[in-house]
Length: 286
Image 1 (cartoon, one colour):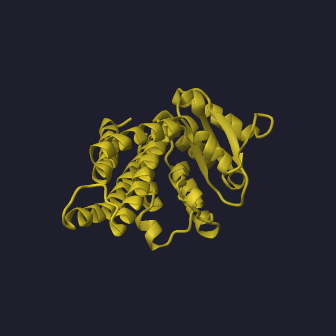
Image 2: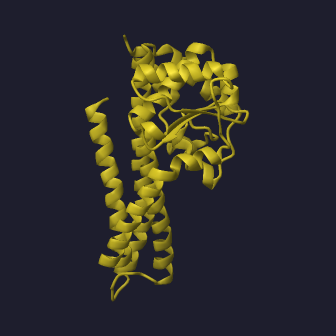
Image 3: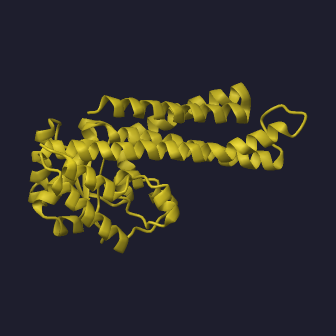
């Protein structure tokens, strides 16, 4: 695991938390700062304990045993042993799209989920590459890191949304005899959610690159994951998921973004470009 990459993630998570506290301070002064800090702790604890259950329920994932999906089960077991972590629970997601994700707060409470068509389209090497990517997310604790970053960014966006209305209608939580405080709050309320989103995306993209590299090293093969990523991207263009407020926030969990790739979606994507990912994978040597 790259020390540089981990340090970058810590710094970015720290920046996200700092933005949240700043917004709380601007909206409500010292009291607002305290509330934002408490809110941050509560939301992060919620993300830590319940994010896996929520996302599995959201996509109607069903747990499977070895008798239900022997090839998938054996590959998850094999890759887990290679990665030297406990085997996660295995789930299959219904639908007509190709994708996979991992979730869970730690090694003992982890899960790997794949969509049903993925098992039909991927050959064994490609499926192993996909599973190795998801196992790497679990080993690198990305499932927790990305849930926390998404939660903090979501809270910032919510507080900023409320602050915009407060500034517009004069309910500003700061003392100011002129309009300076209101204008400052309005500007920050617009910029902070954008900055928070950019930081969250930077975290997500860096963790995807790390999971790709870790997966290739685990199975000593970069080509199988690269080939799988190309199939996944082609399918996502043909069968994108319908983006909703409740599901779009989970885009970072999937191995490729499952939603329709418009200009803004690509600009604010939770994932690096597949072309760049496959280029890096094929350049790796073992």
